[in-house]
Structures are given as C-alpha cells and as structure tokens.
Amino acid sequence: MIIKGLIFDINGTLIDISTDEGSKDLWRTLSNLLLYQGIILGPDELRELYFVMLKAQRTAGGEEHPEFDAEAVFREIIRLCGTAFTQKLAAGKLDQLPLLLAEVFRAGSLFRLKRFRGVKDTIRQLHQHYRLAAVSDGQTAYAVPELNAVSLLEYFSPVIVSGDSGYRKPDRRLFEQALAAMEMNAENVLFIGNDMHRDVFGAQQLGIKTVFFKSNQGQQEYAGTEPDYIIYNFPELLNAVHFFEAQP
Image (cartoon, rainbow, N blue to C red):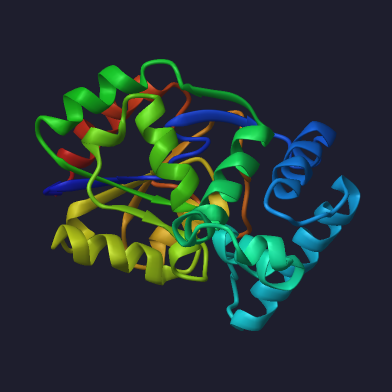
C-alpha cells in the first residue's frame, strides 16, 4: 500500500479531553455575561433555551447525522432576547458576540485538555513523511484553538470540523472533504480514530483503511465493523503505518 496521507480524529484520538456542559458555574457565567449585553436570562432559563434551539437547529437541517452551529445558536438567542440596550452595542461588538459566547461556553465547560501520551513525538515523525489532516465532530471555534493549545495545529492541513457543514461523522461527506483538500485517493490514506461507528465505519464507507485507537473515549463497538488495525498506545501508530506500507 502506498501511503501519502493520514487523517486523524481529534478529541479522544489526539487530545484527551473532558467537558461538562451541565456545570452550574458555566451557565451562571454565561447568564452574567449576557446581563452586560442587556439580555436578562437566568442560568436555568438560558440553559433550557440553548438546548431547545440546538435541537431545533439539528432537526431543521434534515440530515441523517445532524450537527449544530454553536455561534448560530447564540446569534439566535441574541436576536430573540436582545433589548434596546443590546441593539445600542457597538456594531463590531455585536457582530463578535456569538463567537465570544461560544468560546466562553467551551471554556466554562472544559475540565481537561491535554495530548495523549506520545502524540507530539509520533505526529512530528509522521509529518516528516506524510500529509496530515484532521476531521472532527464539533465546532471550529473549539477545535482549532484546542489543537493550538496542545501544540499540534501546525501539523494538520486541512482541519475539517462538522459544525461548519451541518452534519457529523459518520457522514461520508466529511471524509470526502478531507480527501479533496488533500488531493488524494482513498487507497493512499489511513484514518486514525477512537470511535468504531463515527470514525472506523465512517472512513470505511469510502474504502479508507482504518486504525482504531482504543483510548478512554468513543464507541468501542459497532455492529459489523472491524478496524484494519488496532493500537492501544499512540506511538504504536508508527508500527501500524509500517504494517500497511508492507501490504501489496
């Protein structure tokens, strides 16, 4: 097998992450921040409104595997709940407010963010020989800064994030976007992920060979799906690459 590129899932594969979107401190902080924008919503009221709008956005998209846009959710909350005070905010501030709220949401829910052991050195070695890309479920407002925070962003191009498309893995279109941006064929690429359904099944729909990283996150089984290779520690990926390169 001639390998030209590798595509990686981010959270649970490269990054060991823990978040709590039900944190009372998170919703209190968001509620307080909105107060200074002229929007008065209690923490519980804001939380309920956010998730109702998130669900409605996913439903409206009509996708089999729907994704949401966090900035769009907060933009709609501002539109519905904004006051005369809100409308008098500086135009630049008002334009940037949905992104700020999305970032504060993520920051307030984040409790752990670090690379899995051996990721940096392994990625550095692979980057010397292959094109590396990332395909992640989530939001660009989260994924790109978090890759930067763990000193990995510079190694990946493109970074495809589901929140920009309205659908999430295992939708084959996300994998197709990565292949198109890399200008590579499926038979010359490996996909590395930690979720048997979203990552392994998703990539195999296009004929992409898969490496399953059995980390502490992700769906470990999916009916009828088997990865082409399994690793239990991230540096074992180097052995996996050599294994595939030895295949005819």
